[in-house]
Amino acid sequence: MKIQNVTDASFHKYGKVLEGFDFSGFMKEMKHTPVPDDVVYVPSVEELESLEVGKEMQNRGFGGIPVQIGYCNGHNKKLNALEYHRCSEINVAVTDMVLLLGSLQDVEKDFTYDTSKIEAFFVPAGTGIEVYGTTLHYAPCHVQDGGFQCVVVLPKGTNTDLTVKSGETGEDRLLLMKNKWLIAHEEAGIDGAFNGLKGENITLD
Image 1 (cartoon, rainbow, N blue to C red):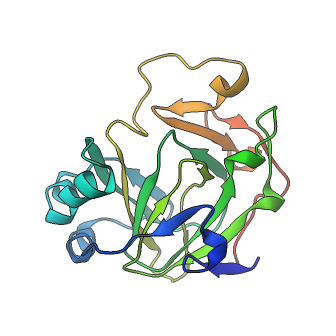
Image 2 (cartoon, rainbow, N blue to C red; image 1 turned 90 degrees about the vertical axis):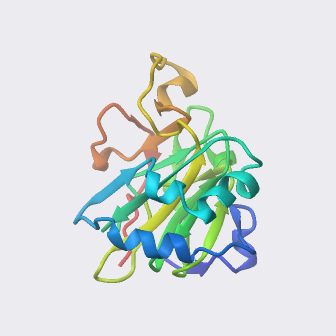
């Protein structure tokens, strides 16, 4: 698969590179977070949220609404699933990483998605990006032996346990956690997920 760069024009429909932020605080604090052999996601970390750049993420990044700042770390080379939110997501690459992205507009009426439409984008360490709410995404892929580390900023409560019952028809089948709609590949074996990804479970070499 061709790997593009988030600085390329082809990324513009999926998101944008953030400018004018000092991410050094995130980079330093993330050295204390684990990088497992699989993937771990922690929605909210007080040490990240209390940083000056964390406050900037809330005030400048999300216009003052409450946010949660956590991380997604680990080792991964597969697509496995695609998710979307009713909002943008901010990612800060602590290490080099690759994101596999698609467009919500390409999801079929039956909520299946053809994985041949996926595009791959390299995100250099130290780069912050906004991923639009219409962008399908999931866990980053690592490009170095030490795995990947990524700061994740979202409106407060996103990706936490549902307090309402999800439905069994239409888009309601995709609602897996708060503000998280997910389409999985059957090979991933994600418990409770709607297996609507058609085609190859893309794997990066």
